[in-house]
Amino acid sequence: MKGFARSRLTLTLVAAVILAVIALPLAVSGAGAHAASTSPTNSTSPKFAPTGDLDCNGFSNIQKLIKDSMLCTDPIGYDGERFYDNGHYIGHDEPTVNFFSNSPGSGNNVQWQITLPTEHALPATQTFENTIALWVGMVICDPRSFPEKPCIPDSDQNHPARYAGDPNTSGSAFLELQLYPPGFYPFIHKISCDSTHWCAALNIDSLECNPDMSFCNPNCTEPVNFAFIQMNGVPPGPPGPADANNSTFTPNKETLLMNQGDKLKITVKDTSNGMLNKIEDLTTGKSGYMVASAKNGFEDLDLNTCKPTKFSFHPEYSTTKFGNFLNWGLGQGNVGYDTEIGHFTPGLGGDGDKDDAPCFKGPTLPGCLDFKLGGDVDFDGSSYLPDWPDGTRHTPTPVVMSSVLGNGIGPVSSPDGQSDYTHPYSSLQFDTEVLATEKTCTRDHLSRCTVPPPGSQFYPFFAQSGHGDSCTFTFGNDIRGSTVNDFGRDLQYGAPNIQWSYLDSSSGIMPNPCVPHTD
Image (cartoon, rainbow, N blue to C red):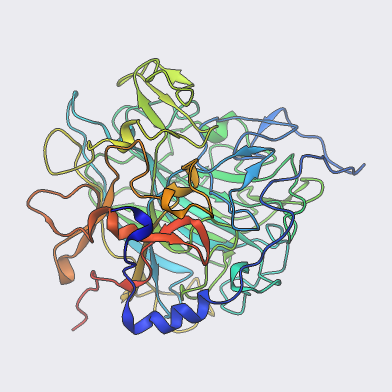
């Protein structure tokens, strides 16, 4: 059955609320989705190094990326169409599960428990062949990011996403706490820290566009702050987009390395100094953290000049109520779990497609990484084969994640205070951005917008294992002897979300089956 014809898995009890939100008018601008191609003229523009992080996508007019294989947030054009950075489509494929709650603290003080995959010996599929990163996310406050409007940290007083029809929607950036699988290294050129360990980093993406996207600075369209999770909390190199250098992307002796199969407790919360991102390895007893603070060198940029200012980032919202989304993201995202897929093709020369390069010899096995063309645009690489975790030794073990838990101690007047993390999120939504990469998918031809996409043999999905206190989620395939609910496999992604963007395919809000007992 084609994706456009699938029934949305909408929870009846909240349907009226959702319809009230999505029925508001879609903002449309003649400016379209394309970023401006003319550099700003300003005599006060600072000088920048020839390499850096001014544009996560690598298309800055004045600077090359230090690390080509950056994982960037996928923007949406102002008219709901594809976003173009200096004339280049920059989207990619990110199946996601987003969680919703009206409890104070659910948008700025959260905790996850995740068990990392374990690799089996070659020729078994390796995790990095399927996904180059897993991450948990959160919308954060950045008044110098799209739409260049003030924002109030940790507050639902912020104006919600622009597609709710509010021209004053608050300035937003997006935090991704990314976990990188082992085996395809070194990190600065590829995706892994070493041959056997997982590592993690804090990524913050902003968007330098004015409110109607008639101008996006071509020198710093999507700047990124980046810092590894460190045992001493000190970045190995400058994290800010204007000051990053090779050491920023080179793990050192303080970089937290995690073993395959380790069980992690991940905390993302606000503090008076900036957002704390902490990983506690419950298996080894080691831990690491990073605070997104001005003191640590984090920065935001001026729209017209790209001039950096040291900046401490804080969460945007208090809750994750439906509608508190990243206002420039292609998906309806805030607190959620994501798997970035569609970038790796095995073999030194790939499969001969234009989306193969650049290619590397290994060391675990040869393969090609593509980030410039939106990834595997013909959907014939590793991510779109049935080689995902299925409970056999032909594939790695699956990542296992608990339902996210939020702080529930009333309004967050003192985010440095104690947190109980006993409040589950009542509902969730599955979605994927793969439709944006499908060249035949257009607003006038929704029948061509399908999951799985044309050319793929398989599309991975979320599944549930266990019930109650032992309920967890996996991603990939049905896990033999473990899966109790796969939510219809690819049917879980629903249909094109035409109220937000037809390029986003989402299930609609549904009950969270992994709500722990609280007796």
